Length: 442
Image 1 (cartoon, rainbow, N blue to C red):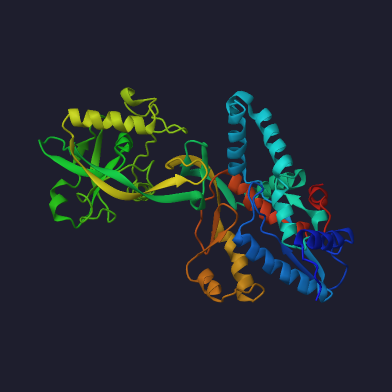
Image 2 (cartoon, rainbow, N blue to C red):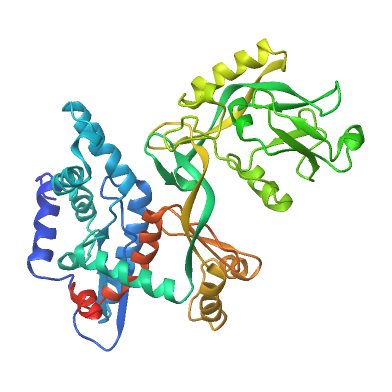
């Protein structure tokens, strides 16, 4: 038995360097072909156990087919992770006493590229340390010029085919980063909160209807009060008008199954522009939509002058004080509830109405379903095959969702739409040179 110690940093570096120098990971021409496109890890991140697991499986499959004389390619690349990168660059600038807005767009983008060039290869080197046998000569970054041009081309093609369109939609909005984020980037945290009971005066009456809310500032954008149609205690009030306290605007008491007689007072304030459930109720009942927030979470011009310009939480304090002074605040309770936080900014996320891009998944799903039916695509385990035909299935494409099976699923902002398009064009690079896409455009 050898008495020499095994020093992995020396042994493994030598072996991997030999593999790379001898181009052992490049495809060798053959009729039989096999390829894998790596799910691109974020350029901002470091590998975790999930990466180690799925990349080990990909490496195993790649090496198996390479050893069996397939023309084999494992296409590597990294994702630009726009929001995460922006947050990291902003923090670095703050340490240097520089504000992003003082730099301007072009200078800030230059700083982002400087950061990418300095730190962007960390995760690639970690993949190499795992022994991943990707063809690194084809390594791709989602913001490479050829891919950016491809995104524009595919975007226009899909638009002309009627597969993508623009419309206003309620989304998860980060008031600190001033961007839409996906459900995957929202951290639902259980916190100590307060439930406020507020009474709304009924028109031509000395009576009130009381609602309970954790976000009293959103009452500035209320457009209805909903009660359950089977709730006997409110039947005499259905169709009547009430006045929103402090706002002096009249709204109607409507019926909707969403209102639960067992929850709170059984009456629910409806603010379609600032709550996902309320948005659906608003669509069902054709309610007016009033947005009361600016992109940075301040009260806008749609609210009474007294509250305009205040941050949402400062406005909450002022509104509660005014409700109390005017005898509209019935009581408050201490409760525990879940609050959505942005996983990068650590700020409370607001449902916010913005103009966004959609993909028509119903049309896109037709070909996908046919491929599954003919077994060209196989699911492991087979439960996945049942899901795609029994209603809907959500495919996670980076940081957003596309719902296959007939539902038009929202894409959270232009950055997510770009990622969707990149997935379409990236795979065309397999077994081709990097400039293939540019040639395709010409």
